[in-house]
Amino acid sequence: MRATRPARVERMHLSTTVWFGLWALAFLVGASGCATKRYLSPNRLPYDMLSMPYRQTQLKASPTLDVLGIADTSEYQLDDEDVGRTLLTQSNVAVALSGQSEDTYKTWVNLIVFDEYRMTAARKYFFCSDERATVAPDNPRRLLIPPRRGVIFDSQCVLPPEILTTPYATEEARLIAIVRWQADQFATDVQDLTGAAGSMQANELVALSSRMMNQTFRGVLGELAQSPGLARDLAREEGFAFPHLSLNEGRIHLTVTNDVVTTKIRVNLPM
Image (tube, rainbow, N blue to C red; front, side, top):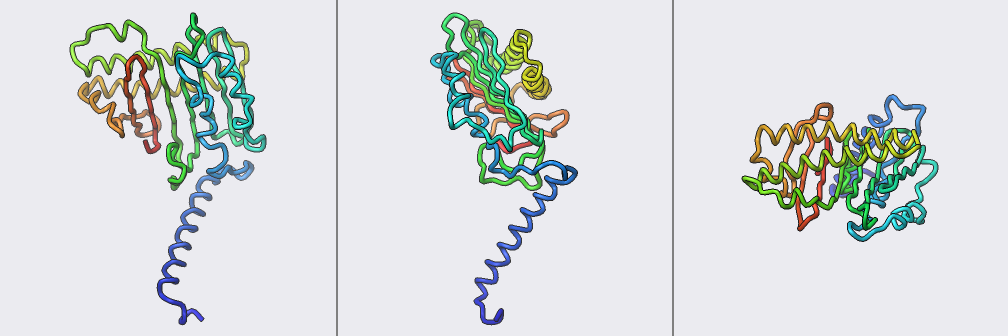
C-alpha cells in the first residue's frame, strides 16, 4: 500500500510526525521533575486573560470601582482547576489583582494606582513570572521549545511635572531619567501598597514582582550607564537588549506620548 501513495503525501506525513515529536519533547521537558503536578497546556491561563485588568484600565479615566468591577466580570473568571489562588489587595489609592497557578509556576500581578485627587488611574502595571513558558507572550501561536523561565512587565504611567519640565542636556539623558523614574516609581507603588494592605498572601505575590523588577531594572540602568546612546533604541520595535543577572538577557521598549510613558519588558522571552 505504501508504494502506491504519492510522494507528496509521504512528505506531509513526515512533517506532521516531526512536529508532534518536537511538541512531545517540549511536553516532557516541561513536565520533568513535576510528576505530582498537573501540567498546564499553553492555552490554560493565557497572558491576555491574566492581564485583563491592566488592559481594560484607562489612564486618567478609570475610577476605582471600574477596576474592582473587572474582577467580577465573566471574562476574568479563571478556571479553578488551573488557579491555586487569586488575591485582591487594596489601599486608599491602589488596587492589586494578583494570582498564582495551581502548579505555582506562573505568578501574575495587575497593579493600578490612582491619582489621589481625581481618583482615576494614574499608573498601571502588569507583571508575570512564568517558570515554564511554552508560548510567546505577545504571540500565543509561537511555541517556545523547550519551555523556559521568563518575566513579562508592561506599564503605562502619567509622568509627573518635574520629569516633563526639567531641561536635559540631551534626549538620551531625558529618556534615561524616565527609565530611572519608572524603576523607582514601581518600587514605591508596591511598597506603599504592601505597607498599607493587610493580606500577607497578597503582599507576598505583589512584593515578588517588586523584587524581580528591581533586579531587571538594575540590568537596564547598568547597560544605559555604560552606553547612554542605547537610549535612542528604546523606541525601536525590538527596543534594546540588556543583561539579566539570573535569566540571561532581556529587552526593553519605551515610548513617551505627551505626558504618558509606556514600557514593555520581556526577559528570556521574545519581544
